[in-house]
Length: 193
Image (cartoon, rainbow, N blue to C red; front, top):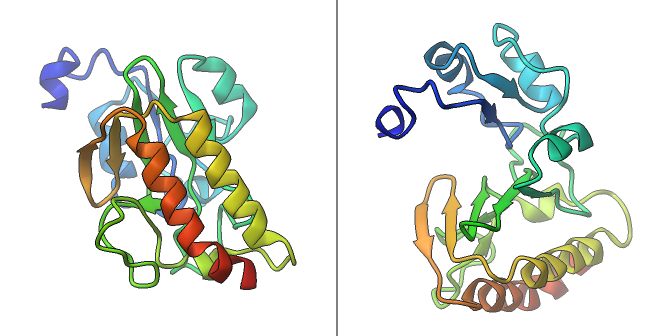
C-alpha cells in the first residue's frame, strides 16, 4: 500500500522515527527507502548505527522547522528516553492539522492499559506512565497539564493512529473529550507518583 501511494517509494522524502524504543523496523525501512532522510532520537542512532541518520534529532527544533505542516509535542514530566528499557511512555507526538491526523507511539493508546483500564475510555495512558515520571515533585502535575493543554490545542483531531492499535476515527471534539476524561481519571494517581 505504501509503495502504491508513493510512486514505488520515490515520493517519500523522510522517515520520522518518533519513539526511541521502536527500532526493530529501522534498518529494513532504510533499505526500502534509501533516498529518504532518516530522523531518529539519540537512542535510534545508538541502537541502529547502520542507518544513515540525519544529524538533526527527530525531536529537534530543526526538524520542526523543516516540516511546518506538522506539529510536534513531547510529553512533560516523563522521560523521553527512559533508562529502563521496559518503560515506553515517552515519545514524540505528531499532528497534521490539514488532515486532522495524529500519530502517537505508546504515550496514548487505544488498547486498554493494565493500570488505567476503563472500558468507556477510548484513549488510555501507556501502562508504564507512572514508571516514566521524572523524579521531581511536580512531574505528575506537569504531565497532566501537558496532556490537557494538548487536548485543547489539538481538539480537531479526527484520525488517531496509534502504535499497536491502528486507526480510530473520532467525531469532531471527541478526541479532546476522551483525552480530558482519561487525564481527570488518572490525575490523582499520577500526581501521587
